[in-house]
Amino acid sequence: MSHETAQARKRHPETRAFGGLIGECEAVRGVQEDLGKIAPTAASVLITGESGTGKELVARGLHEHSGRDGGFIAVNCGGIAPDLLASHLFGHERGSFTGAATRHIGFFEQANRGTLFLDEVTEMPAALQVYLLRALETGTIMRVGGTEEIRFDARIVAATNRDPVIAIEEGVLREDLFYRLADFVVELPPLRERAGDVLLLARHFLERLNAEHGTRKRFASNVADELSGYDWPGNVRELRSAIRRSFILSDGDEVPLQNSPLARRGSQCAEDEGTVTFSVGMSYAEVEHQMLLKTLERFNHDKTRAARALGVSVRTIHNQLNRFGEGASTPGPDNRRDRSGDTARAMNG
Image: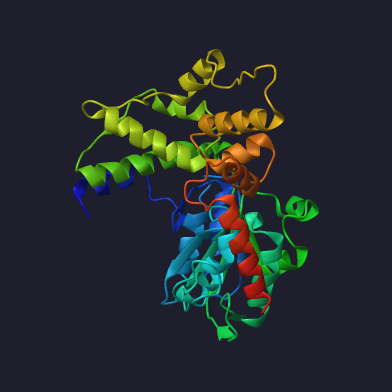
């Protein structure tokens, strides 16, 4: 350990952490203690919390402390076209649907003896949740277009930014799947409820940047007040980005908070970025399209935050982008319909 790092730890004693979950507030300490007990077991875990609270970091921590020697496979269930998700999860056999030129090994098999992390599991189509439930109950999967039951040994950790109870009531999460996924439910608090941890986390990120760049930079005297005066709607992810941006743009050894969130919040009220102008005669579809694009732009194309602002699911955002021809890696409507039918037929034998 370097002299500088040792001195820094004397000034700011090492905080308790599990994986990448760092904090000293009571809520975080309770989560850290629970995770330490859960990690060595085979129990399934459902992690809940707003976007940016560190759900994947916690999932990786569970894997690292599990003793499993396989890999950690992370899947964003809302980031894959619904008609392709079955093939990604369970794999497919050659010729099982249009374009399936070779056999594909899915995430369940790739995660064998390791951990499969299903992020935004509530964005998974309801029909596919049935197959997921069966896989969890039997410990086997069947590739799309296949006939062989294949055993897998992967620990399942899932996550959602929704309240599971509300998700069940709204029909976007099967209740039986919830109980199968949630031997333990781990709720990560938003950063606005961890006021005492904001400066601690900021110092942690600064120390990591100093170590990475071989520098000895420190925060300007007013940074603590600026950090505590903002509610950080993007949570730890937003804080980490703010500290990195400030570090890169700073001159000398002192780091002021560049492009302060408080200043941005004030200026945004005067800007027109939160408004959309519609012309008389525009179709409803055009209005919907413009609203979606403007909301995505407002949230830097973060589909989860945009979906929350619009009151819809991430899957709805994804489907609307496809409908408007904005989905970069998604097949066109005709191909998508054909493939979906092929996939459904293959999985039904």
